[in-house]
Length: 303
Image (cartoon, rainbow, N blue to C red; front, side, top):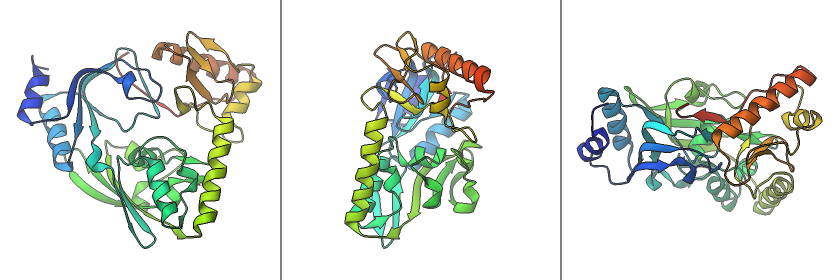
């Protein structure tokens, strides 16, 4: 990359919302992560396309992130440009039983809007942190619900090819998987179809699920949610607990004493400590039960 590439990019593309050397620990739910060379928050799909095309032309690495809730950023941070959608991509529109929402909309806001309009199907999502775009990307789910049950269409940006609308069958949803992970697709908005219901029953279900989540999960400490995917026939947290790893620490990274499927940051945890703990967990579970735990959280950044 040429000298002063950051200043040139900001000036050439007239970027208003940006920061140099932003510690990504400030904007991830884990509160872990080194700096981004350049962090930009973009207001329109056109601006998003301009930044990515500029980066590709100038051989500048780029990384797209949502609300940083399922992410571990390494301690040296991310080289190049970290891109996030701005508040203009946070909205919900309701038409009959359909909701259209921007990818930057908090998933909890989408679920709350559905409840307000007596639409059922998103109760499971009311307590999931992160954005709608991230939820579609990961096919997020909880308590028997998944995004694939409600998503009908997703508008995406494909680098070099522009904007497209993908129908449900094109999204290739699977367990914590979607087609967006297979290419560098960026969700811009999603259309969901829900079921008319009774507002009181919808809110009662949301309240029950959120109470269960609060009682079982370590919501008062920084984390990235469930660390591992659910292995077939097992629960990751149960295997970790039965392996005797509840409360085990590496520095300030700890296997949660409340829910062993979580790793929590006790204050000053580093990504290196978390990764060491993940390796320890995987080795112990494999040794004792012959099960290979596959991480669910994304690990990014310079090693």
